[in-house]
Image (cartoon, rainbow, N blue to C red; front, side, top):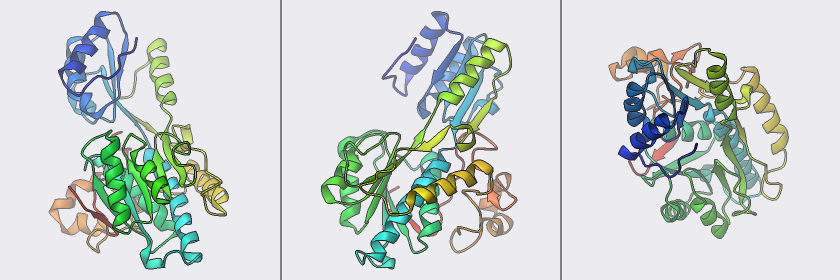
Length: 327
């Protein structure tokens, strides 16, 4: 049974209750703002399993039938960032831009950890191959606002951004990029159909591994993990088709190399030697600044353990090289 267009309000609770009363044994909700309503329903229907995507409260809820799940989308964002960085290098080599003009723009939905983690991993991927890259971020304060995303992308381009990416759910940004002739990297779906000459690729999620796991656990009578997050190794994330009409030469070989390293675990997206915050490493900030002590639970062995302590993204550091134009 499926319910669509369920808002992040009391309608979510009503939908969850209705599904439970119809005899559903397991219920999935897929929007961040659904969590409190799923928790409410889970408390009232202890025999039903409630699984919430992108949330963070399951571990502290004290309810055995509420679960959070996400994917390591930061991995595919990193890979898509590498694709973007190679495109910037091509533009530099062609004399289209100078190295210090390698500025990307990012259309973000909200200043939440999920979005910050995503744009940071994208930036770090680009920086790994194009060390002079910088990035500006502007928020729409909506998950899906086609006109708003188009306007923000257009504004970023006018501000000198030569490549655009997004954490927003419409084709507004790539449409603007196609109009302006600016390369872009999408999210969720392949954007080549709307930006055939400028779309490079998109960072994508494959939810099938989790749904298969959760339902099989229910059928087999085994416990569903309170927090679940997997990435390339389990085919839970990927990038969409690389656009031969837009990508830089050598991109496919480099992508294969990076994806293999992620699957093998030899590449860590949030390697702490690759970024600073206010000119300082995160390890030094944890030691010297009480405001950063909370990150000690996530930083070990030289990297930030994103979505390992909890499934929801926790990396919300504002690193050097990225500027938020709006809050």
